[in-house]
Amino acid sequence: MAVSVVILAAGQGTRMKSKIPKVLHEISGKPMLFHAIEAALRLSDDITVVLYHEAEMIKQRIIKNYENINFHIQDAINFPGTGGAMMNVKTKHDKTLILNGDMPLVTNEALHKLTDNDADITMSVIMLDNPSGYGRVMIENTEVKHIVEQKDCSPEQLECKSVNAGVYCVKSDLLSRYIPKLNNSNAQKEYYLTDIIEMAVKDGLHVKPIFVDEEEFKGVNSKLDLSHAEDIMQDRIKTRWMTEGVIMRLPKTIYIDSRASFEGECILENGVTIIGDTKIVNSHIKAHSVVEESTLIDSDIGPMARIRPQSMITDTHIGNFVEVKKSLLNGVKAGHLSYLGDSKIDSGSNIGAGVITCNYDGKKKYKTVIGKNVFVGSDSQLVAPVVIEDDVMIAAGTTVTHDVGKGALAVSRVPMKIVANFFYKFFRK
Image: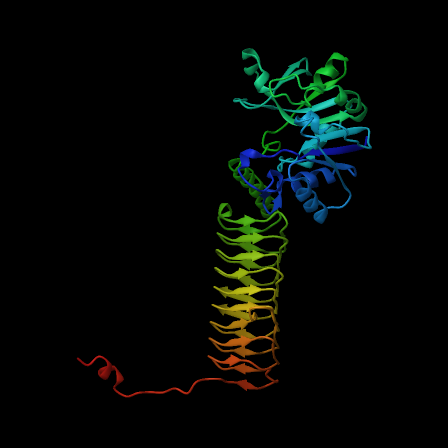
């Protein structure tokens, strides 16, 4: 049976103590809401995101990254709460999965447990030794009989350890029948989605509890929760890539973005950070190096190097304290202490220590093009825009301000002056 998905993302998230909407706080490189959307996309072609707080900001972020997502703006003034969020939401399939936008760790496999059955309603349930803060789920003979929000629990109900994980799969016609009947006669004066469970039970319908892993249904409500979710997500990402064959030294010290990918024989040493949509193929990233939004093939980087976005590096050695930005390097050696920005450098070229491509004049960025088999001596400055053709030597300490033709030597130095006995004169008493 086809399933529609509704993702609730309307809350203010005041416990995050941030101007950024809660669901846009990032987990391993993506807003937590995006993790929920991607889990939903693996299940359904009909996805609706319910928004209210900072609705337009969140909507534009989603539109920029995903297609064919529907939006519904909650009337949170008149209909607050999770039930209010579902008021007037329309879905096209026979079942509707209701998911929370602050659950970045939920997996496709876990959601299938909720959707792959014939119950009228399935709901996610967690068993907790300390259930404080959660709504309690009263179960009899493998059927859900009642859900009570903690604020409305009796002392006896507070002892119940089966709690509501907040994700439901409901036959869509039941939502159409029950949502308009919700009321706010409770301590919080909110419309609770959980009240549809009681309505279904009274009508003799089959309400099935699905026991799920707490980790996968963990909600993020604070920056402390955010850090815990990040730890879990990072463990998953690194476990996946190590299983695929990536070597990681001290993996707990490594950060890998959820959008990064690896192929072939790859090594990540301790303290490495991989950010964004980075692709690494048959390469060795040495200790405490950072790679951002770039592609590395058959290369070694670092230690303590930085590869900034839009770099393409192939068959290249990048040493310690070298920074590369928006550059194409093919078969290059840059051993240490250099900045290569907005550059294209071809095979066989060697970049000496302290070399800088001067790519910015305060207003615009300019490109440096270096051909094959070029030797750039230490402490040279290449003032872009500039083209250095094949088989060129740049003497140490040279400032290159014009194009250099094939096979040439470029030298620019102030003549050296020696003053005899200056030391003794300078320090004479």
